[in-house]
Image 1 (cartoon, rainbow, N blue to C red):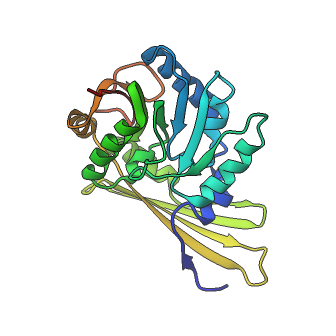
Image 2 (image 1 turned 180 degrees about the horizontal axis):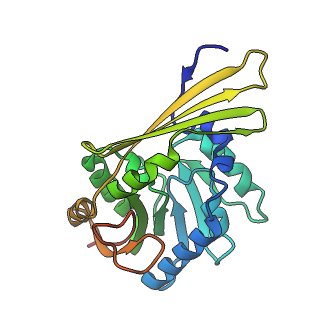
Length: 257
């Protein structure tokens, strides 16, 4: 086998991402987001999914309402896979590259959505604060930012069953290891990906790091932003989030002069 090459996150992984995420119920998640949209906005139309991955959520949202949807991700490889899905629709949906710190191509949206703790990839609180300010520029007056984040409790509970996972998808073999540093609240997932279709098996490794945030931290960052927090929900519910919640969904409204 050739020497293992380190790759940017969500590059080689994009080829097997949908297989790895096959147990995620995106249809259920989309229904939850749809309910949030209509509870907090009278007539949401223009909606962008940020950090969309392979656009599975956007695809499901397209089935639920007369939305003007678009999707974006920082990874060109994830965008490539997502574009294939959305281009195949009767009415294709745009899918393009954009990151949390570069949203200049997105404007006049009724809602921005980011799920599955994508915001946790912002490792410094200052990066989240900057994202909130950039998101506000993309929204119409009273437009919504809906996002979720995972907490240290989630990492502590999940790290064992996420560690030492292996599997196969077509000609690709993968290994996943997971660890959590409670001192710095950093959760690390490493993927070793081996392509056995090549003459000499080629191997890559992607190291993904996320920071787990406490509810009080996100509340303080929102208080310093042009966004007004409307709700903090516990997981996929309309129950108020607590300090013991593992995943928290946030709904915030843009306040423009």
